[in-house]
Image (cartoon, rainbow, N blue to C red; front, side, top):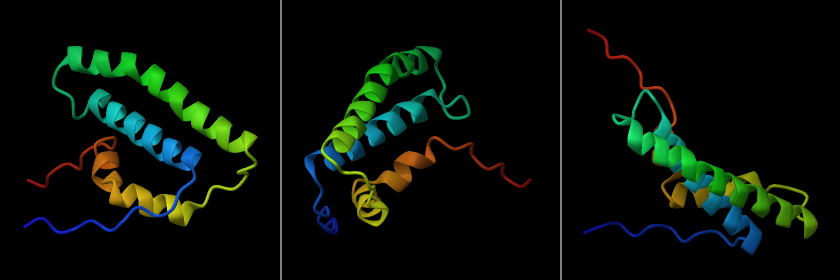
Length: 101
């Protein structure tokens, strides 16, 4: 039986779009990461898609700014990222640790 995930915290629409776009960018960077990817074609496709997702990220932040959402509520957004598996997803962006022989 799969444990039930905690509910997402209350977010504005722009905050939700920020979190979604950020995680999409992270997923693409994980596919591009040369220490983790195995094929150039997949990394190339991810790099091509990254442009559009970076624009979506910029648009979400622009919308927040225009609406007067001047502060980023880091604790709330961090909870949302954790619920959406952000820790595992961002781990793919890092360089893997070397194994001790």
